[in-house]
Image (cartoon, rainbow, N blue to C red):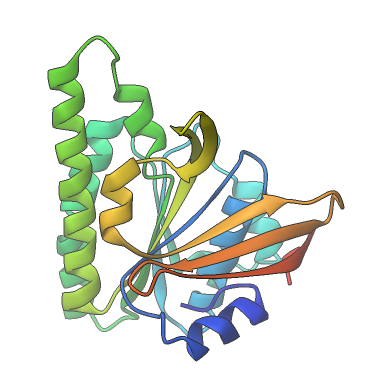
Length: 229
């Protein structure tokens, strides 16, 4: 996976954190989708294809068009899928293997990256505070979806990038930021990248956490209309 921030790529190579499921998370508007689109575009430059599952209301086609500089050849290598609800997202993820196998049989570029933007948006909408059994089933489905993505990552060497949201968790009378999905995400995600605003409107703090080694690296990056650099 080639991310749009060169320093981030260098750190990941140095610490050998290029396996498993990656997540990118942070508050609304920090640049998560921009980051994900740039990662997709970096992949298709090598004549490989990307599956981009977008679960939010408004497809960012203008941003995709702008960052790709309007190249139809580039855009044709990104397959965009838009689920209607959490059940639909669940079905899509469990049918991804058929898409991968079909592409492998064709004389065509393989799928090398799956991006889900976002995995937990529809999950949070489906949650119901008054229906514990429903929430338990949703939590179980989220586990299954991540297990299936992990299986695809290992068996077919398809990279997985999940865009996620921030939620507040109370610990010892203090609220801290965590990525949505709680312990389910903590279990399945191998490396997460948090984007955080700074006092400078164009600057972002980047926090890279590898779960297996429990290591944290922090640095700054710049985002402009042309994306991260």
